Image 1 (cartoon, rainbow, N blue to C red):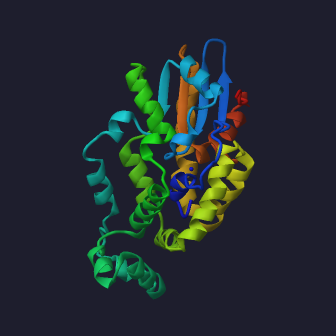
Image 2: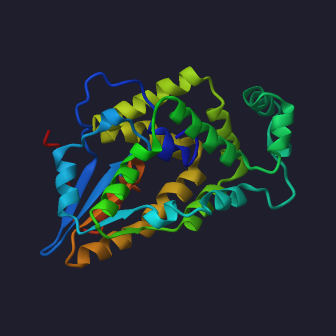
Image 3: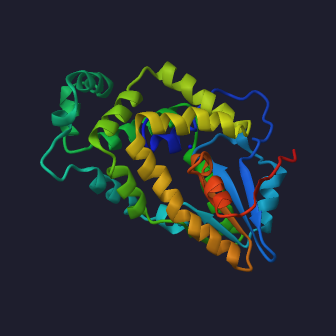
Length: 294
């Protein structure tokens, strides 16, 4: 699950409290051939304890899968050098500075958010996408969401405990290249969005989270995919479309094996004309939505 390019993959996460904890209606699809199945599960990267237990259909898909596949392999998520790679990718490499690229109004808002011009100056080597992403994640965490409870992390931990094989669709370098490849105007747009009043952002995030929790793929697509395509089209291509195109043949290869696979990716990667479900259907594959059981 954005307030700008990749933030869509994170801002599908924020919301108000759900009073009664029914399991979320899963965004779960299945494709099969004579001897194997591939399940596609749309994830949120941070959730709350109230989002568990999961629907029985998700548990059945996990139990049926011999291999669990994530955007990144679990070992990459545990790599102690991940933060260093993020920081390196976020640095300007062409002599520009943060204050040099930001419009005066955005710089003033950022200074107010960070506590003064000195703080902005201290971040002069960082590109706007990095600040926007960190601000977005910080807001999500402050709202009570936990990255350790995200659907991805939940199943990474379970697969490890169950000694179930795992793998990833891409490397951390692939992901960082998509983030850092965003054009500057779209990076600035993402930062402006992240600097909007917290109440406004939380209301928007709540709408998205509730749509995800209700399994309303149409609402999530309308809120996020179309907004990304309208306001940050290059970022949408780099962060969603091109990655989906690279992942699609991998899913087809999984189907060609005699093992069942569960593929867990951000929900946005499954939705819309350029989402994995549509791409696979265009290849002539029957991809069916799995109905919730609980």
